[in-house]
Amino acid sequence: MTDHLWSGATVDVSQVTWRKSSHSSAQGGNCVEAASFGTSVAIRDSKSPDEPKVVVNRREWRLFAHGLKRGLL
Image (cartoon, rainbow, N blue to C red; front, top):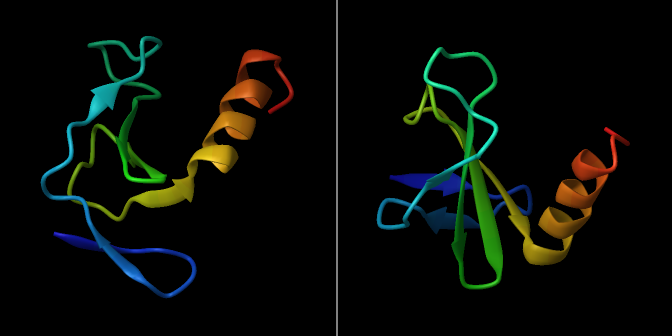
């Protein structure tokens, strides 16, 4: 499966290893998975793995995670 980056480039995430957030639960709700590859991180909804993914660079991912941990988002 090929997913589109915001820049218009494409990236193949069919062979990446997805990791589920430690805050996700088996009862549904907010479930997110992330996969690191190269200089990027792909993010997807674990309940809808075939839907489009968001792909960001590692710096953007770190800033996003930092904001979540600090309650800024």
